[in-house]
Image 1 (cartoon, rainbow, N blue to C red):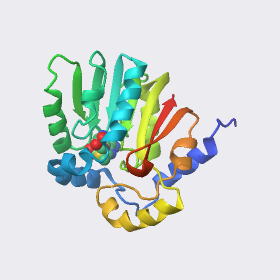
Image 2: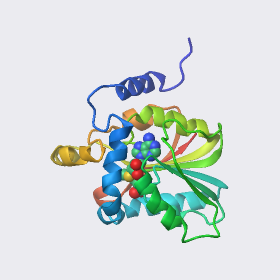
Image 3: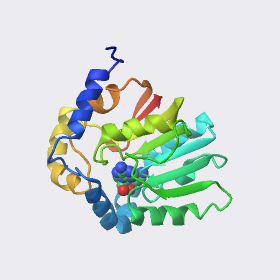
Length: 226
Ligand SMILES: C[S@@+](CC[C@H](N)C(=O)[O-])C[C@H]1O[C@@H](n2cnc3c(N)ncnc32)[C@H](O)[C@@H]1O
């Protein structure tokens, strides 16, 4: 049997996806958590995570591609940064978050923006439907990150672009902070222990660029070629 680069690590990540008792281990709890969070989400996570969103959108604009899928679109905070000429599709599991994204999208009636309530671990889109897929702050929230990555890679063009924005666990300094915020973070499905090696390097996509973003470089913007 032939194995692709990163295959064994990726298999380990997929096995970890099935581990019982993890935070946010089912979609229903993500839906509940973000249903409760929707009215205050922009206030709590709007500004603090905005530098990362802006850098992500800047990178997307530079690519000048025709179609963009945003996974975990939330309240639509990144929508204004995408190229106005692109077809944009936003998906999210939370209807309450999406309702706000729809209101935001209505600010640009001339643009081609669609919103769907979809679990991105099982998307109804055909293979290779999008030139670019963005994942702002969703990979560590979804119950099965490896399953989500598989779906994202399936619907993205081969050679297409994937922009991933997330925090990753790592340095000693962040290790202490992560332990402190762990209980609160897990309430909204954020995993405090989320390794770059397991969730980025494990896959055989091409890592084009990695930039630290947000306060103290807490998050990373990762530009990948499918
Ligand atoms: C931390 S919020 C990020 C929202 C937005 N992208 C931003 O930049 O603020 C994570 C979002 O991902 C959504 N989400 C989590 N798992 C998902 C899945 N499997 N499919 C679709 N949406 C998901 C949640 O409902 C929530 O709206």
